Image (tube, rainbow, N blue to C red; front, side, top):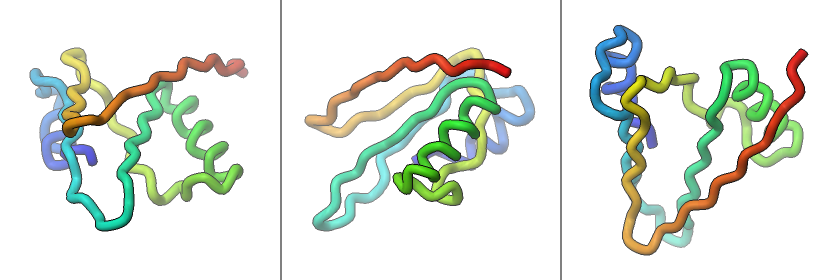
Length: 94
């Protein structure tokens, strides 16, 4: 879950000096939390979200608003035992 109050108040005004923080959301019984990040240009991120929607993987409305990443970066806070996998893909411009 993105800390939206921090992002809205600081990042939009260009005042974010600390990394964006992705916090742990409350657990839901019988469900595993998976966090998805799509990082790229605004057009690229929207395109990926649209593609996942067409594949019926995720509804567009389930994604957060686009957030500009400050120069200080992003901080992901894991829970015990969580792992991370990264995929880099290139998209054709134009």
